Length: 427
Image (cartoon, rainbow, N blue to C red; front, side, top):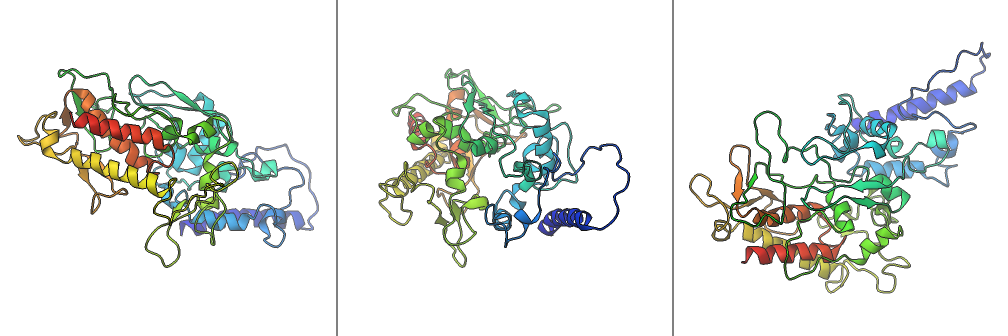
C-alpha cells in the first residue's frame, strides 16, 4: 500500500502538469513569482523539460526510469529502510523529508560528539514521512538529468578513543551514499537521558585492572549502517596490539584514488533479472524459487579489478570470495564462541547475580557467519569488564558482524581485528 501511495502521488503530480500544459485555456494575468513548494521537485522545473522523455518507456532509452523504479521497490532502501523511524535523530537518513532537510541545511555543517546527539540529525521529526525515493538522491526535474544531489566529501567519525576522523572522498555517487552510511551519535550507548548511566567508550589503552568498562546496552557498536564505510577506510574497530598488523586491502587504496565507489559493486549490472544490482543495491539476493543466496559479482570482474582472475561465488577454492569469506566467518564464529564460554569471560568480568555470564547472546539458530550476537547487557544489568581493554574484543565482534561483507570490503583490516581480539582473550 505504501508503494502505491508513494508512486501514485508522483504519477498524479505529473499528470496534472501534463494536463495543464496541454489545455487550451486562455492565459490569465501573470501573478507574482511564487516559491515552488513541491516536495518531490524541491528545486523547481528546468526550462523545456518534457515528461515523456523519462516517463514513457517507449521513448526513454537513456534513463530507463520505469526499470529503475521497479528495481528500487525491491531494495531495502524502500520499505526495508525503516522510514517509520521518523524522529529528529533518525529521520535524516530513514525518510525522504529528513534527508532533504539535511541537504537544505548543508551536510558540511554537521558535527559529531561521541557523548551527545550529533551527526546526521534533523531539527524536527517527520510523523507523516515517506521512504527515501528517487527525489531523495536526485533532482531530475530541476536539473534535467539524474546527477546526485550532493557529491561533496564526507567526514567519517569514530567512537573509538584515540582515533581521529577520516574523510571519504571517492566517486560522486558514493559520496552521496555515505551521507547516511556513516556512524552517528544518536543511539544511546554513550549518553543517556535522565538517570540512566552511559556505557564505556572503547579504549584499547585502558589496560590496568582498575580500569573498568561498564556496558548498559545490547547494541554496543557503531550505528549499523556505518561499519562498511569505516571498514573500507581501515578504522572504526578497536586496534588491540597483537600478532597481526593493521593493514588495508587494495579496495581501500582504490577508494582513496577515487576509482572505486559503493555503486561499482552494489549497483553493478544485473545478472538476469531485476533482483540484484542496479537500483536494488543487492550483491547478495535470493533468485526466484531459490532458498539459498546468490551473489552479483559483475562489479568485481571488470577491467582494472578482477578481470584477469574473475571472482567466482560457485568455486569453493576461489581466493577472492570463498576463501576470504569462509576464513572470516570461521574467525568471527570462533571469537563469538569464546565470548559465550564462561570459563573465559569470568576471568575479566564481574558476575551477574552471582554467576559468570557469557558476554554475548546468539540471536540466530546456530553460530554461523550470518548470525547476530548481542551484548548480554542492559541498563538494569550491565556487563562489567576489567581491565576495560578486554571489552575491545566485544566491540570488534559487533563491528565485524554488522559490517556484513565477511571481509570482502577490507580483508586485511578485518582479519587483524579478529586475530588480535582472539589472541587477547586467549591470554
